[in-house]
Image (cartoon, rainbow, N blue to C red; front, side, top):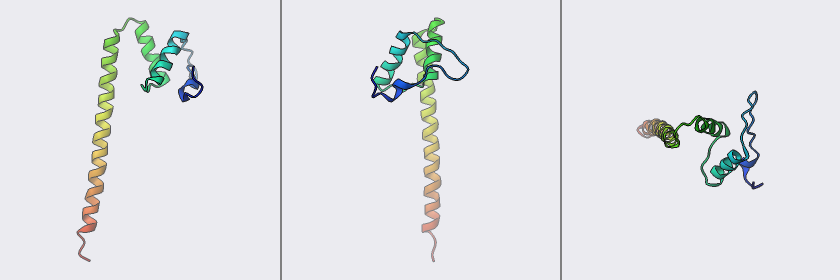
Length: 98
């Protein structure tokens, strides 16, 4: 495990929970981090647990992709609304005939 990786020191044991990850699971988590695939430790543990319950990996990928798309769309709409509000207030300022 690389010591320079900021995620290498992430605890896999949050308060009150004792999810046991094998060394293979930890290696997989490190691989995700090194491949620039940001994945929160809690989400990673949930994915591992779902895979252990024989959830189809492709179904899991589809769900994660759909969730990421929804978040991306929400962020885009939010950003666009913020820009519209900003440009509207600038128009009001420039239309003043003082």
